[in-house]
Length: 240
Image 1 (cartoon, one colour):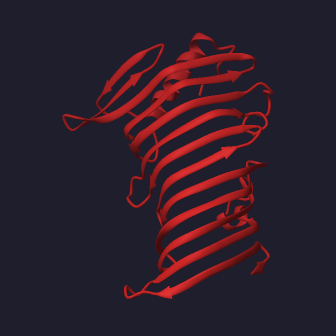
Image 2 (cartoon, rainbow, N blue to C red):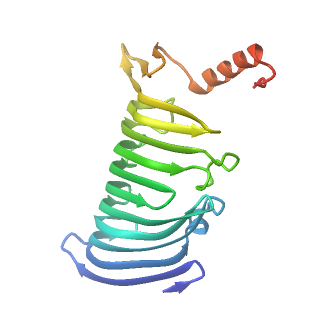
Image 3 (cartoon, rainbow, N blue to C red):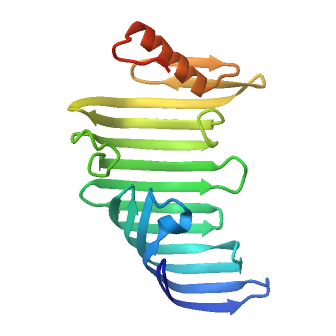
């Protein structure tokens, strides 16, 4: 199929099942699909080209599940074209449980785990091993040619932002390089939970430990922190 948004090629068998669905098995190939236009985010996403073997079941266009093994030959994110991304896992219309591997000159990364968007609060249970990322060449930090990041992250939580987070995130053996300076974090963790029917949070780092109990808002805490910095060092920090 050729469209204005790219080309789709398939070699798939469809077999009716007693469950009123279809058994789906075969190859799907996408060539220069305008992902940004389809997702309504043309400034962030560009074209994608990929091939994947799919084995699963489809009950409608909005309900399906199966397994997938494939490779993204190229995908443009934030004006940078990523290449050689391998995929292997199980999926449904709102879940992914498997591995994603990227290996190229400017980034090496492995992700293994579950991403579940079935409930109101999404669930994440994964490990991310970022061996290296050149943030300047990846267009995340254009002013600083030395900007880079490496880290091992483990996450097991529910939530959409830091204020409704329920679970734990850990950073191990992480290194951030900025303007020629390097910050190393060997053990950083943030854990949120309920205690006596009130939210609680534990923060553990190489530099400081903190425990919060009660109702809090991180956006408000950030504004307060920046306001204090502006009063202490007005030449370097502006009043929010």
